[in-house]
Image (cartoon, rainbow, N blue to C red; front, side, top):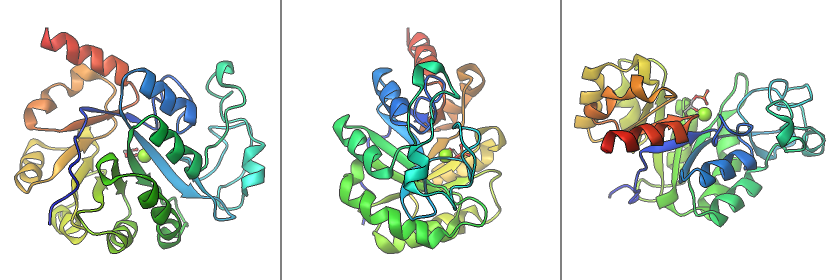
Length: 253
Ligand code: G3P
Ligand code: MG
């Protein structure tokens, strides 16, 4: 049994190209595509009525003109929100995307996605995974999908729903825990997604030796990150894919 044959990119646009467009929106994914970045990281969670949406925070205050927690809002209510003007007037009227609309756009643009199962405080990981994963697995080929989470329960339920050869799973870590290996083995992980400033060289070596791809978040300064490529890091998850790409292109000259 092997993992899906994923051609890992060097860069993944974090929450879409979130330095150029409002995070986790269709516009942010289009912006990544226009910048030549073929993979995006996106966060998925459920509204109070069970609708899966692409959104990072537990509430809508920071990234829209409204208030309230996702756990209590319904689809009709969030569609009345402007999720673009907070970023720039150029994005006025941008909406919180449904998972369904986002999957359709990813397919239209033939893009890959690192979908983060975002289990905010007090939310149910099992309900989220069971609602989201059948839709995701039906829409995307395994070569264009990595599902990640900080939440071990969510990852375990994902693995129960799809075997290793049909679904690449990534384990997200802030600080690397002592039992990182057991956590990754428990879900047959494809990749480990460490917070790059906290990752030590010896930890990276051990993870790569154990066969895991390392996808580091969130790296926005390509000069500061640069030595990590020599460690064997596969990929940087970045808000600034164009700046990163320019830096890498210049290095190759
Ligand atoms: O998936 C990498 C990164 O997105 C994890 O942190 O808070 O930006 O979702 P956060
Ligand atoms: Mg995320």
